[in-house]
Image (cartoon, rainbow, N blue to C red; front, side, top):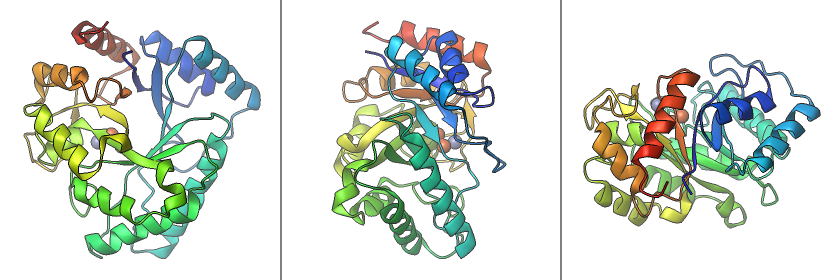
Length: 280
Ligand code: FE
Ligand code: FE
Ligand code: ZN
């Protein structure tokens, strides 16, 4: 089954996100746990969350992907930012048990000069402190473009974080592969899909891959930039995107669009992607 969804706004409530996903032709969706630039969030009503659960069940949705705000930094130099990040993420993970089986994605963070190795230890320490063996949510480290002091631009950096996790929580932490980010990071996922998938499997393991952010890129391979483009309009090209969504080792994973689109734009992209899939 083609699991495909787009980024939707949480502003109208939880059930509204499910309705937006259906409107766009999706069977899953991604949303920010709170306004990406701010830090205020209002707690949704239990009725609203229950209504979303009913909608997802009725329409056979695949797990929704909650994306942590960009303001979090698990490997900040400033201890207060690290503590704020850990406390807020722990709170969000507790809330997500209201939507059992969720995925929760975050950017590993920027080490801001402390060095990659120190950053990797801080990220693992935070996960070891906040992820519990009993939770139903899978927490995902996102592959990054490697701009500035970002951690996660190389598969090996994510592997190093996973290797530092307590064994009891190892199956609660995985990876979300962002096609724009890794392309910008120098992995030719669009042009040489087989080789990059094999490299991901060798370094991280495909069993740790729980979600794919499906984006085209405005920048050339290895630009270390991170500017998303609409599907088929960027350097990944339509043919590259076709290879990715039909790849035998990727096609069963859920795909989430984060292209620069409004809801009607997403509906058009999802329709286009369905027409490119070899099994629908
Ligand atoms: Fe992201
Ligand atoms: Fe992404
Ligand atoms: Zn991005």
